[in-house]
Length: 340
Figure 1 (cartoon, rainbow, N blue to C red):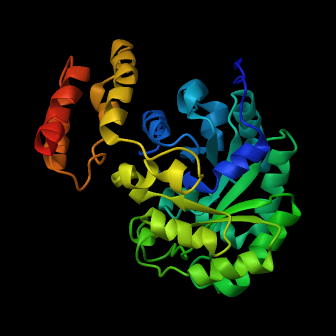
Figure 2: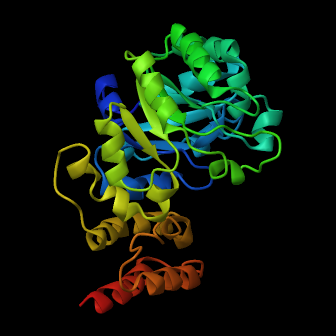
């Protein structure tokens, strides 16, 4: 299968700069429609795909799994897997398709991921991770990065995390995103693993002090730009935000360029809706369903008058046959009328 490389993809330095603020890879959430929506709100933040297994990229419907829009840059592909050769093949495909970074998932705690010997369970096998990233770097000049936890189960994070960073960085990785929680592979569900294990920001700060040459981003429990700024001011290189960026995107992304990247002025949520309309019309005209796009927009007016009616109107009407931009405009009237 042939892929057309993306023209004028961002340089490595620009991708690294974009990692100052990134939106986490989230299964069933950060698809191409979500990323287009988020990109309209921030020109600079680094966007990630959902995790895709290396096997699916190599043996599955690659064009569908890795489809993205040219306006999404800088955009990174997150891969799951533990077979160096398979990961190298998937990385080469991603590079040919024009992605700006490939990230290896060493943090997902789901049972399905464990059974496949990848995700957070790889925290117990840093030498295998080193072999994987070495194979990935051998086939591309793209940045190869790693997202990890501080440890799993009964591991002592203060011992495990620096050893993991030492071994994997020795293979050539210089950018890590650390979810500042353990993953309990025994006893907690994936959902519980996002909240129950306590956060340890101090350990991540200690890792930055111990490994000053590494670009370290922090993830976990970060819900606003105030804390984002505090973490950056304290010396960390980047902040990755997950659920808050999805459920209340305006609070995170509309001000991000001005506050985090010192470029531009805060955006306007109503303008973002109008900017989405051509994309929505094209998607529906190509046979797509309105709800595939608007499900990512439900939280846009979080906390504003009319937000509940906005969500209700989209939820009740976006799934109907023939639903298109008129449904979105009708939903928007609930917001603009109450705000008037």
